[in-house]
Length: 429
Image (tube, rainbow, N blue to C red; front, top):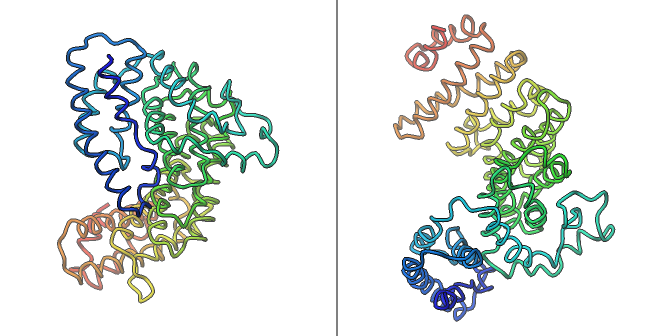
């Protein structure tokens, strides 16, 4: 394995890749580009050598995985060619043993993060502490000496371990997984926080709910995920919203009993405080952030159900506004599509309470419909918009049957040719 060890050392990712997007020195950029091209040749040679090695020790497997995993991600050190090579090398380890995961976490991940232990966790057990270790300033101290950021690829390895950890293995590996995951999730840089959200999203698809509750990590995760909705003026904001809201909802559904007050309160925190009270209030002019928040709205509305009705006063105007063409409204067709889809979800979830808003909803849907017909385009997005408007009108007809005999009938009398394609299903229903 001596030759392979030499190759593995050549795959140590230069620390400059940490700030690759902000590098301006041409000599550094050239050096990193050259290293990135050479990595493909190194991986290809390593893969060739592995063909003649049928048996590897666990330590050798761990070294191999630790070197290859970062090239299976989206880091700036990765090319499509290196990704393909890495995936071939990692293929035999798609179902790793617990002992192999433990080896990777103990020897590769833990050393990178142990200089800055998370102040709210017992790093020996993975349990939440009653108060922050180190006193009131512990959170600020936690951001000092972040040597783990100088080890590009370590996050990819942590994510790989979390993604390949089976349900029954989490108990044994908990104290090795949770501290670095929480360090990522609570970082002050949104790019790392987003990586943390993605790791958590993978983890909560597998982790036992009982383990989250027993260790107190369920509350810690929820609080950190919700804080992501306060980072509103960053390039990663839209992606952070799209990742953190579904993670909050999944975590809540996993760790709270159906119909419980706690489940209702947590979902209301996400919708009321996070989306309406934070994003829609403080980022009202950030179009990408608003669109992201509306994209994730149907998921939380579905989870909250009729409880969404308490927020109709804020939700309906927000969703209807992009549908009407006005000088101050330059909503993109994609935002209109997201708004219509969210509107249909809200109508179905709040059917007993939506009659008060039927006029406002119908007005927005009709204005959007007429505008589309006037444009006369037939691209895919336009067709999706028309289908979404029909879905809103159909949902409204089911929630408020009186609109069929009153409002819809009047519209057909005014202009049957224009409105029949929109309302025929609803009227027949």
